[in-house]
Image (cartoon, rainbow, N blue to C red; front, side, top):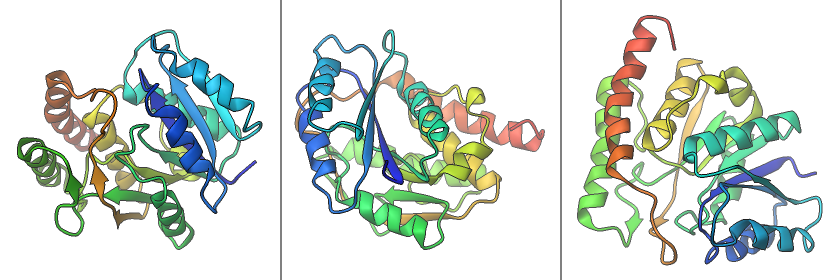
Length: 240
């Protein structure tokens, strides 16, 4: 068993899943992978099952009954990884918007003192490729908004490329995490920050997917806007 595991949630990622898995396993640093698939109708889970024959004891699969959201998929994966005592637990998308090679940089940051290492698009300028300007502005100013409301000094609060030390996830009541999109990413950082852990941002270049479809929606954006306020209120009332 490796000391680090990469949790990859999937829904209809048949065009990307084999390539991303092989890219992670080609790295010099050994990482295990857990794919949490929401019963994709395109056969994503079946492809992972086939690849498990090539990567026994390194590639794992959890299939859920149906599409239930990114946040709940990560919580499912976190619980699975905590039970198996992985020291470093990662979030990463399946679509190559996150460069697998940066996994090593995130883990190194945690080994050097970070409790949470964030693959950050905005810690050094704006490092986003192939996004329309409207999407860049939405994402960038969402993080500015989060800073204003929460007080966290994080440049990329909605980032989804993260390395956690296991103790961070063990300190959070994962059953209380209900958000699914941007708000999930914000809440995990806010709870980590509120618990006094050391958060470090590692600059990355984010490249928009070239295969498959984005899962972004207006509901996810609305959840994030309202969710930040609710998190701040809960903290003020000592209910976080």
